[in-house]
Length: 405
Image (cartoon, rainbow, N blue to C red; front, top):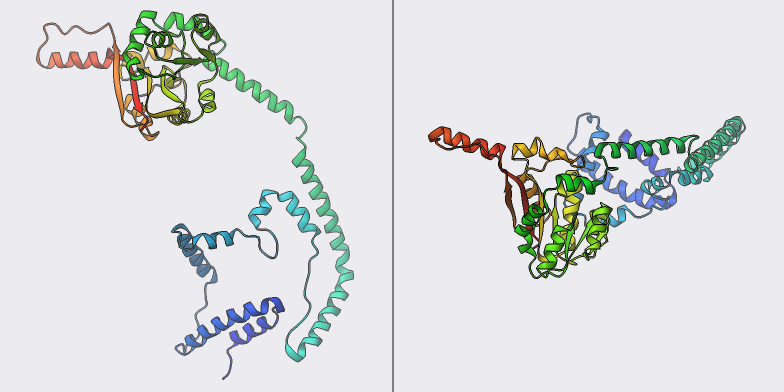
């Protein structure tokens, strides 16, 4: 049988394969050869050029889909990440590229000049050795120069990796100062928040009445955390009801006031404190006017920590201004410069639900004193007056209550 030109070329390539790879190559060509013979029995026309890139793209996509479905199993996945005989994986080298680059430059490039074309192999091997010997003197100067340039580049990259550019330290310090100043100016954090709470936090009796509304969720509890304990109103109420409670707040003056009254309170960031607690260590968490002081993403992280430290079946109660009431969302909310964003009730309820609390309920309270009079109104006029009252002068606060399953 006369072999096709492609099969002759394949055989010549096979002869050039090193001995340690010949076995694998023989197996591959045995399979490819059988497939080719079966194909040639049915093909009588000139073969259509094969788009190798398209085939490889299809193979990669099929492999990706099978890996995603877990068809290959853990053994194959482990083999994919195992070091290859020829050196480390590219992903491993990328973890420390400078070291990998230095090792690559120090590795001698090897070329097997031997030919395995039967009787012609010896002369071909000799010819290759002569050709390499002849061109070595010509390329040596270029190789030496390239090696010198490689060494300089690696040295410079190593210096850049270990040394900061001149002046970068001063620039970083300036950026940090600017960020601190921006935070201070944006939130007035250098203001005495104790004085602000005394002026705008409402009367002690009003705050206590609001706390009494939710203290029932913690009856019989021995370790309840009050996030943002402020003036200690909830802590005093809990002590009167025989509930073990303590608070954390960033306002040192308010914490000192609570401690002076014999209450347990600490000056520490709420999230930092939560992260320091072991799981399932609290009987309840109470937080009034904390959620509006953080960004939504930060709030979700806070809720995650609350769920982690709560014991099963215990409650989280968080209260915040009600932006559904326009006089709150458009005016009262913005009195506090540390407020970030209003929290619509439905959104806050959703945050607790996706954080794993179930059930989650809403409790609206603290109605506005000022309302439109609807005396003598009937029909549509009465309905409009009630709608305006609900929209403009509705409940100023609401609480979201979630229970850890």
